[in-house]
Length: 286
Image 1: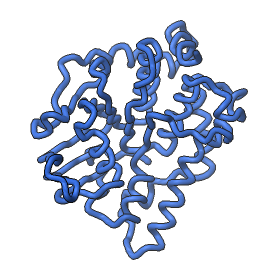
Image 2: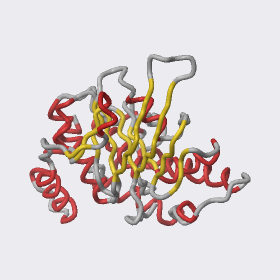
Image 3: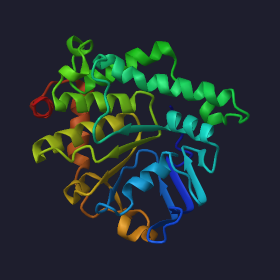
């Protein structure tokens, strides 16, 4: 969808959540606001509530109190059908296990994201809830989807000769790039990345981060990246610590990625095929 900079990409207001029957765990976030194009690193140890927070932000679990807004559309509180529609229209996800359909082609795996968005929109329109103005014009037309998918795959270094290959025939690095393209296909407001680099060495991890953030920037998409790996923090301008949620989003003094990624994006845009771009793709092909 086309992101409206008059609205924050993500806004939480007085959010609270507790599992029923459990007094040992709760989430309390008084306020959180991310601008369009701003990228956030959420850090926390296993068991700190990262997955619960992601489920709330995706509308899979429901808040006890408070509100969640995505690109000016209210995700919570809302009906399950409404949450499904908002999720499909506003959120792209790169999963830890990638979750590609192994027997589908590269191109069909990317286009699958649009099928989920269309289904959610149809379901919402047949419900008693009326779509807001942000949802009504958010869909790309079928004529736009395939060129968009092909453009993303090309920018990510997957040439046309690979588009009809089954996803299972690709290397792990190539599959990661397919997952990025799928998450960005419908121009989401928010891209959620759930520990996608956890199984990678440092070289492959950095190659993945360059491509992910460069393409998110090109799509004016806000990235919310969750990991226990503190070494990833310097890629992000802002951080949120699960251990101190009340402190909210904080500027990241370690932030160092801007110059490296902007140069990388300029090279992508110019299609120069330079050594830096080639080495990034080569690293992810292994």
